[in-house]
Amino acid sequence: MKKFLLVVLTFVILTKTDLVFAQISIAPTTIFIDQNGIGSVFITNPSDTPQEINVSFAFGYPGDDELGNLTMVYTDSIRAKQFGIDDRVRAFPRTFILAPQQQQTVRLQVRPDRSLAAGTYFTRVKVTSNAQTTDVEETAQEGVSTRVNFKFDQVIAAFQKVGTVTTGLEFENVQLVQSDSILRVIPTFKTTGNSPFIGSVTATLKNAQNQTLAEQGQTVALYFYGKRAIELKLPEDVAPGDYSVTLVYETKRGDIPSSDLVQSPAISKTIAVKLN
Image (tube, rainbow, N blue to C red):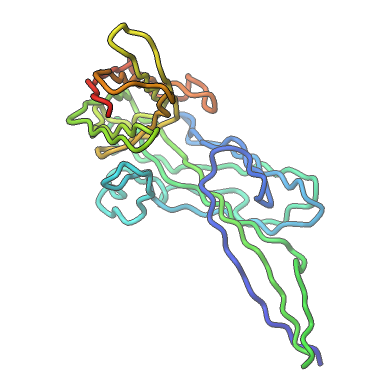
């Protein structure tokens, strides 16, 4: 009798856009629960293979390390009690088979809690997919086959806004690190208000004549306090000397409607720079 050895490989993906290597696609990539406690996510199977889908929840948020690199925090039990909704949210359906070229609407329902203070509450939604049929099968001489099944975890954020919500940023020191043709700008931030700051930042390098020499933008999701770096590619012919970098933070981004984001006036900070 032929025997099978099942090998399961799991890939964790923090979803920002539709992913080329994922077995399914998810839209939207950020979920906002409405005033009735309902949210929706659309899961599509663009492949020719049926996919087994499981939807689960875990409290987490973007953090950072000492160098300003993005990390994910899933072990903050104190903030989970303060801001988490994973123990109040349910998915319908939670598990299902998604046929090839088909789409399934998954409804999220958050149980109300009238004791909550005004603010934004959140969790991470993990959508796990794996092919219903064998992906790879190789038969060894002894009659034992190896069956490899790839599992993909796509993780997106879900938010629930309660009452009047506000957000903003305050900055402490800004660290500047120049390495070859890269200027790494690492501000230390603290969020204000009762909600995370979700939007974008633009960094602009200018000379003494106020001419723009380099500019870089990126999306941000800033929770609580920490460091988040942004890098500028310096022009090849930039001369050593005194310059300035201006950071402008705005509560807008291309992948989320402005009506869903907690709004704040634009926040800017200018830092003097001496390039080598």
